[in-house]
Image (cartoon, rainbow, N blue to C red; front, side, top):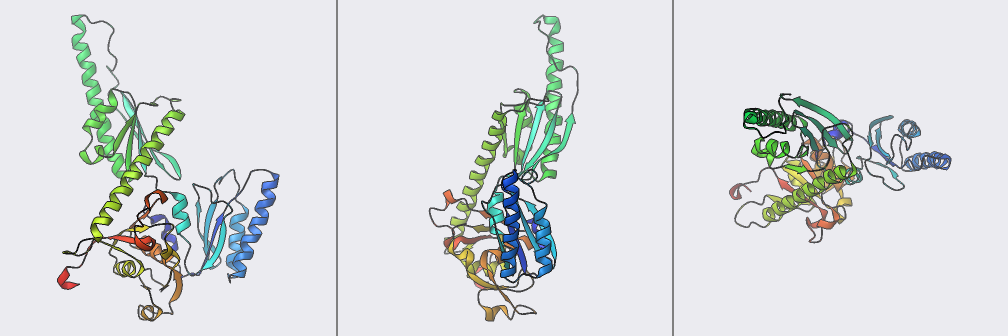
Length: 379
């Protein structure tokens, strides 16, 4: 998971009001509960020391929310009398909560967003294809391609005089498959997708897949459900896409954890992976984190550490933090500080699903795969 959408939070010093808000039900009783919930959230912020302009901005931001527009709720990040970021939640956090802290509370947001891959759905027939990009925020159109429109249908007769026509039809299919594959490969690069799902004509799907570049073909799956024609969507198609996304996620998590296990055990070479707050903080301070691993049940997530104004001003001890930069360091949660650092350095983040944490990796709940390591002689 990339954290580029958190960029607005990196340019403000804080402290921050973070509010995870559950809008409840869309009825009269639900409206009354929302009103009470807004009051309670604002009261909590005031009790924890939030300034009045920021509380007022939060109150205004929450008052306009409704189950119809935000069925799962929203998270608001506010500071300095302004809501800096308001993000729709794809999954409901029952009850919600509010807090006032030096840094935004980010881990619950990443858990709720899940790690569904960005998928590119290609709706294919023998004349072209429509592309759709899907994320946790919903689907959006991602272009289309049209190939040759004639001839695309075989004739019913098997007379020898029609064989040349049948050959033209098959040549059209092959030509269009090549055009679709070329456009699909370009859409894949532009969309930043992790997964491609081919939907539609049973003959054209494998023809398109065979013509894709190897890197795209490796993350491409097909489904027999649905098609390009309007109204061809179905519950079976949605289930097939969801299954493809979950299988891709399981495979990705497994690959990352395998790399982590292999990277941390080497004794005759520098480690490619680290775990525990001190080691991960050192890597973050030097911008060496390629992928930050977060285990939601890890005890180190709420461990106290110290941070300065800049995301790479991190230290386990306050005395070390005072030497990192101007201004007094502030006490922060380890997960909040490291996630802010990951967002600032364009590192990937992997929230390890609960079903994958039986072997207690990474230790304490925080670890990292590294972009580069020190040679033994320079360590």
